[in-house]
Amino acid sequence: MSSASTALDRAPQWLDAQDTGNALVTFRRVFAAIWVVYDVVDLAWGMTERSRIWFPHDRSVELLVLQAVLVVSGVMLVVGRFVWIFGMIAALARGVEAFEFFALNDFFFASVFYLILAHSDGGPFQRGTRPTWVRHVLLAELGWIYVTTGLLKLNPDWLDGGQLFVRSQYLWNGQNWPYPAIVERALSSVAVDARLSQAGAASEIALGVVLFARRPYWLAAALVLGIHAFVAFVTNVWFFSASMVVGVLILLPRGRRA
Amino acid sequence: MQPRARAIYFVTLLTVLVVVQVHAQFAQLDAGYRPLSHPPTRVPYSWDMFAIRLDRCVVGWDPPLEVEGARVARWHDREPAIEFDTVFNDADWYKASAERGCTYRTEARTLASLMCFSSDGGVHELSFDCP
Image 1: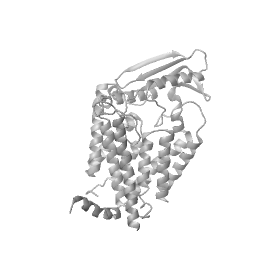
Image 2: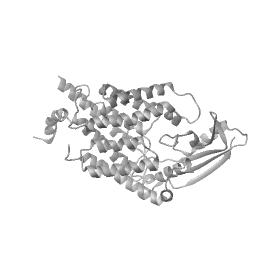
Image 3: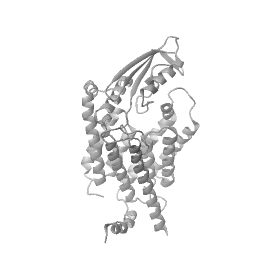
Image 4: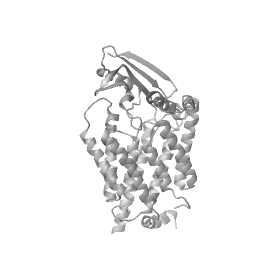
């Protein structure tokens, strides 16, 4: 029997397999809650609107509607009602927000995760179940994101520390970012930024590989916490960082490979 | 019938995810990205976070502007401290925005200033009288 036919034979079993434990449901609730907070803040204070155009202007009605749809969809994913329908709506709304209003990588990322999470309750065919394949696809998606973003960072701008220099100096000088003095001194050195950048790209690629292998948990946990604590505190990216951390910590099996 | 429909649905879903994201990597190559040589550009679903070449500038005005009733001495006076920020990838856009901000000046003689950081480690300062 060829390996291809073996894989085809196993596919129905894989599609039928159910996830034991609450990891999938927990991740859906936490992920959706993170982005509900983001969307409520965005809706209330017009943050994306301001990010698009800093100068005073009327808010886009279409964007307001989109943000309201995202809040409602997110709440429904948190409470676990009509998961497939609202997951698909959230994926579509987030994609429209990214393509039509503000091309933020975080929005593209969230649209993909909503699309996959829409099936965390069984999708249109097996409602009320917890398909294992959804967890596996989410882990593979996380792995793909880390490997590709790590590989795309293998360029002189990133590896030579220039990117980190620009972002950290911008925060320090523009927002009086509260780096401790020793950290600020280090980050103002392009040579130090280069070492940190190289370690960052290597860590991302390593984390991607660990996620594809789905073990060891301790290494993935250490890498994801290290990468995103750094990203949050040094570059002011919080919601995306939180999403990635909970994704790895909740979805990756702790014991033997799931 | 249902298992067959489910299989088709699943294969379609997975195909969409794979095609979109693999295509994004080829789009990066088409746009000039070369490993260890040329940085990537913004391509949706390619996961180019922090990887593209960019500048960032800190913008200010002296005396402060008046925008929607508030005094604005620095670009970040109208920004929250956490997460949300209005940024551009090119110093020219910051300069154009500093000029546009001059329309909100309160005194005829107002100085706009920029401190720009570039990924070669350079710091460039520029100031000009509002036109």
